[in-house]
Image (cartoon, rainbow over all chains, first blue to last red):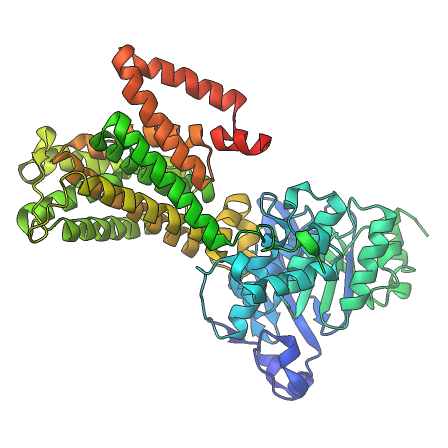
Length: 283
Length: 318
């Protein structure tokens, strides 16, 4: 049961909105200021508090970055937002609706997609096969849950064309018949991004998308993200601050499970507490 | 645009339908040739075993869940068909249908309980259910099932046509094998098949693609178990006698061995593994009293040297 967030009914969210998982079909009724918000979000693992009473607001249509030292709770936050595990306390709101207890698959259906810190593809499936399920997920939602799974993939031209479209987007079209596990690490990262994009989410959570990539691959990835950022709300966790400084419109800094600073990147990065916490600088 | 790298054009010279037809003809010819050498009854037995291995491969090879309880569904099919033909109607087709339905229903009930487990827990819980089934058939319901001694399975004619007599029976079982092969091959190449293989590699990722993996695992479990029950019903007719051996958890090892020898996660592997295993078992037992020892050596060599089984090894050098 999805509960509506009380504050979401007010004029702060503009006109009425629909819970339609397809951002590109919403049209002019979508004027919400925030797409995801948390209230007192807390996650404890035994005596360790990984995320501590966090109140976070991600604005719709913007690119937000989350930075912080190792162990500050960034990935745990993503895991909570995507439903990987439930919070110990607090609530998560998505477009004004309480999604705290929704399963990951339900959140994906509503438009939340994520990538993982460690590349998560299907290594023994061909590259194009890796995209079949995500492309079908979108089609299924679009057609109101029609499920026809027993057609042969290789005989389904429309499905193959959709898969190829996303492979072309990330430049992997010539490796469609290669096994996912045989791709280079950088290509595997791109494939993972293609999988996330093909879900056509409203919000894309990217967990360290540049980790393990060389400068050339990072440039390509940045170019890709710049191309698609107008279509999604993007939240990105990254250690390479210099790479996302110009990309993000909003930056959140986490330390020891709490949000210590947020705002425009140039201002956040000059904040004394942030510099002390992140780079160990004092004064 | 993408040339040969575009999926679906890999076998552009031969369409997938024609390719399947060629494969089916090859399998049929090989089985018929083998029947001249080994006898129709024995090859029918081989083919039934191949259907069982094919069904097992769906759970173990494709979905990546090792189970030690597959014989429960094989036995359910065997006993249901035999009892149905004894008490309701001797019609073999209806007996087969009853066996498949019983296997599917049991898989639905057991599957609901076991499908959320994985790894050793999945294997052992399935084995526990298999033991429950075995003890029910062999002891608790002995007055109905014939207990440890088993019972004869009577098959009646279809009108004036005796399906269970050779050569009709041989060709009927061959048809069943080819049908199972075709359906499971089609299944493995479908989006559902991709889903099942994806679950094997990363169930977490499947959930983050918006799918309830438990639901798809349950459906796969039911499909595989139904095919096992189907093989069980054929066994009841093929032998004309059923015994608790057909539901014994110990016989799961035979299916796993055959799967490993042929190559897991491969439809052709299941077929080849099933045939090779049965040939080893039948031939070796003539010349070697403790033929299981030789099978053990074959398995050790397969596990250490040929991890992808016979088909994997062949594909590597093709």
